[in-house]
Length: 562
Ligand SMILES: Cc1ncc(C[n+]2csc(CCOP(=O)(O)OP(=O)(O)O)c2C)c(N)n1
Image 1 (cartoon, rainbow, N blue to C red):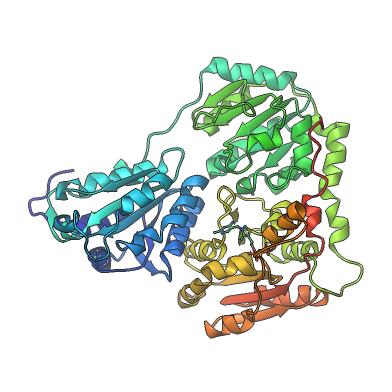
Image 2 (spheres, rainbow, N blue to C red):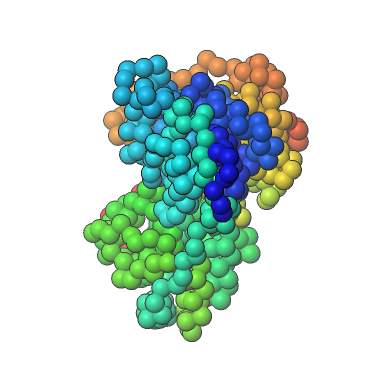
């Protein structure tokens, strides 16, 4: 890397840096303080600009690229309201471990201390919810700050970083060029000391019911591959958090006891409560606080992660294996000799049966009335190909889906669980379509409630314009149901939950998308099949039956359960 003989425009250095970092898609909305970068993007045929309808959705899409590919997704917004609109998307990315680099414009340095048009202390707004936020102050910093933003976003815990580029710097030049691609890759982690690995090996050999508890940082393809090899050599029961969906393969499904999260009433929760050794892998408490699944703080825990744990009364690991998860699990597999055949145990047998019992009632005897959630899910499971990416918004819809929908590959069944941010599913489906090779070549399925859909429904226009192939199902009950049923359980009544009044089929048609309706049980199979076969963007308005939703929160395991 050498200094340039002629200074290069800083906006071009930003764009060169993106390209060298491996970025091929950027999501954003233009504005006067950032139009220099948009202009520079025109000269870079290797980067595709996706113009969104709201900056929050641009951040959601960037985060989905980060989550699916493991490399930072990029969003761009103008100063002031453009930058502040990124907030929820970047906070979600940081909490949920998705690498994102956000580039925002800012007023020129000369005006930065004054009240001036569209000025805002945006970095002060974004700083608490991002990993790092940097305002470029001189031209020669541009390349280094860009490099640092990418390295910061990809180092653990992954999350969002922000670079603010003043208008006047974007227009002027620097002789320091963008760093080459190799500078953007981070060095690998190694395994923990062998003595620690051997100690964990002994704990596993002595345990009567060890349980592997997979969290959000266990879904990188190389980690999943090692976990699967480990389980083949040393079969033991596995549970997933919602964001770990897909870590367990179809081949290993007999070891899978489901996902845990809302509420502590799942077979997986009972398994954790009965376990004498919980091995967490890439577990992050934002998904499911330890005080909820380790109520008495008595569980024996081994923590395997890239980072040290958030130590506390309810999460006190006996040993922490810090470093490369894949190295540590591979070393662990080689260090264990004999393990008990746990899945043969009576506890495991009955919990496994409990976990699969819902299927018996999923296909109703009588096909009439509003659509039953489990009937819908069992059909979706049958009609969606195992290679289809499914994104799911927060709401009662996600509690059902995360409990009962199976996905056997990582990065293919996505939800927001750390922040439970409403509105992610459609933007994520668009991003999942765009990272396909070739882009938008395969069906993507997304789901939301009627409330969550309206948080980002304007991106229907983006999806149609990009020629995505997305089927979005709206579980429509005219209410913010997940809040409604929990309010009812707490207070015996509900407040602020009424929605309704939107005809989603006509809404879809206004955007030139296709609209379908599933009004009742008897229409589920035929309309679902038709909608999934439709090539293009479609919305399916599903009249959902939430009359049994309080069951989702019933039979919470008593505190004394052991
Ligand atoms: C941005 C944001 N605002 C508010 C909430 C609180 N919240 C969680 S679920 C929910 C209701 C979701 O309703 P809907 O999308 O219709 O799905 P349903 O629960 O009816 O399936 C709300 C308001 C949230 N999680 N995220």
